[in-house]
Image 1 (cartoon, rainbow, N blue to C red):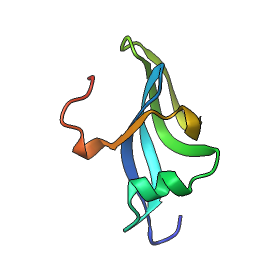
Image 2 (tube, helix red, strand yellow; image 1 turned 90 degrees about the vertical axis):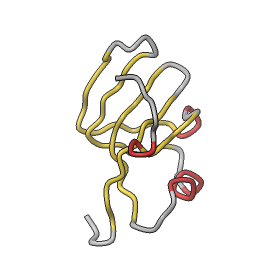
Image 3 (cartoon, rainbow, N blue to C red; image 1 turned 120 degrees about the vertical axis):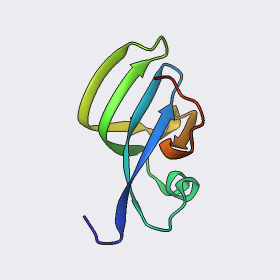
Image 4 (tube, one colour; image 1 turned 60 degrees about the vertical axis):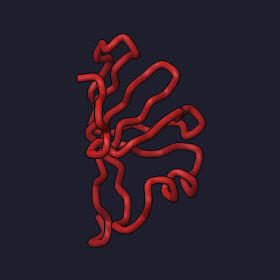
Length: 84
């Protein structure tokens, strides 16, 4: 990993899933800019995927998520309330 890159823990919401994981984002780059510049898929590491019911579907070291399926994304450290 590049010295300027860092991991940002995020919570991603799609129509069916809540996904928690890490994005590799260069320091100083805003999450909004990262999403606007990303291609068809975004790569997330250290992932936990839950159904909207709260049931854990899978945990994985790596997951590609289709950008067009993302409805909301928030840095985990800024989430005031999220499902446990």
